[in-house]
Amino acid sequence: MYAIRLELDPPPVSGRCAVSAGAGPVRAALLRLPLDGARVCHVRVLEVADGLAAMCFLTAASLLSAEWALRAGAAALVGPDGPLAGWSVALCEADPWIALGTWQDSARS
Image (cartoon, rainbow, N blue to C red; front, side):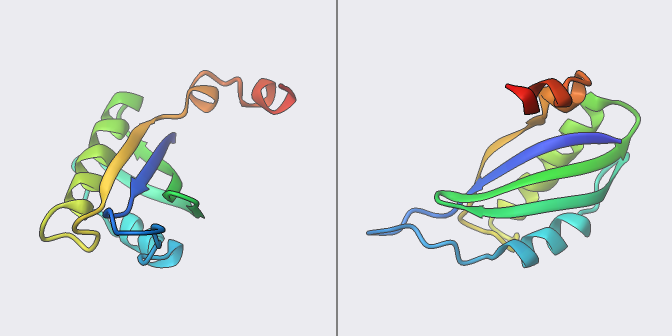
């Protein structure tokens, strides 16, 4: 299983940016993504000041294929016909602390 970080930015609006998608519906959408050669098994989504931040755990043939599959799936979510049309993917990459097996070291820093 591979851990991939995903950050989504809402569409720009005048004044303060309001997160209208909500963490629950985005989590459900991520779990239902049809990914080529990978599967999202667990997702944690948090509402943050400038959008949504998620940690996605995927099964795939490799870390790179998990990252590519989630990147393509996230692009479909924010695409013109997706449930988050108008949003943008700010980050979609493997979490380096978990990927390198050093997550316990990062907790101490």
